[in-house]
Image 1 (spheres, one colour):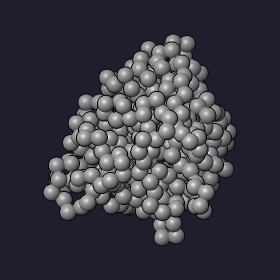
Image 2 (spheres, rainbow, N blue to C red; image 1 turned 135 degrees about the vertical axis):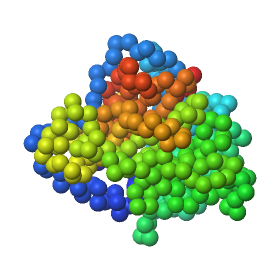
Image 3 (spheres, helix red, strand yellow; image 1 turned 45 degrees about the vertical axis):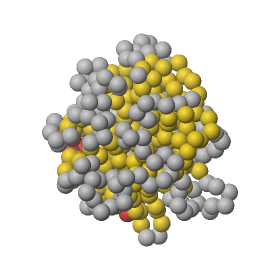
Length: 369
């Protein structure tokens, strides 16, 4: 279960999400024990540096590493919930997605605000076109324009497309060179742009979720991740060198889990071959960063990586977290995961990991130098 202010998830179609949730609840009643989601005890020392820029209720928090000192970054006016943050290439501006309801609207929606590096009043905005629209997953191109997702959930279903705009809200040049499009990619969500601005990664959700990549100079889409063991995908993010893409995925423990995990071991024996990854496991919630974490967790997600040519796909975490997002360290050697359970740093090569906080929240974050 998600917090009351959590937007409708964009990572699955509405029909598939409802089916998955029903199966999760059914399986939860079959467990012989009360499962607990991933938690961690904060390590006394942290062997990584930099600054984490993390959604925190209606604003942001900067967490300095290795000290873990926090500083608030307000986004004014104080209202709604920040669900994502993305820093411009020169670090001078932040694009944030804010979920809120204007007084004259009957339904919540989401806009993208542009603020300075220290927050404050917005200097620009890309606003929803109608009540209920959700503009999210902002990511910057080297020219300073934004690529983002526009999603609408209604009686006709869940529709999404990717758009490109200048930060003042005006239309930017074509998203794909040589395309007849005016900057749109229909039926796609969760965009990510490579650091050099040559590749766009995003999700397709037709028969099953697919992670695809496409050259911005033109050419066909290439599917990088589509696997029966990955029951849903979210939050693709390029590594600083552009060689890798990290993404979150709903996993099926019975088919591809760490054999040391007791929940997965039981499921493998009791429910072989089933969609046992769809389990609503109970765990302790938290609010370290000001967002109420869920006490009854949703589908179990973990972090995977794959090279941009589709090779070397592998799983990085075995946390079974609630809605984790990942961000790369500036040197590309580490990933920070931010979920309803914890804030955790893991080495890409698996050599080490650090628990930064045993409490968490929700939203896309960044790791700055």
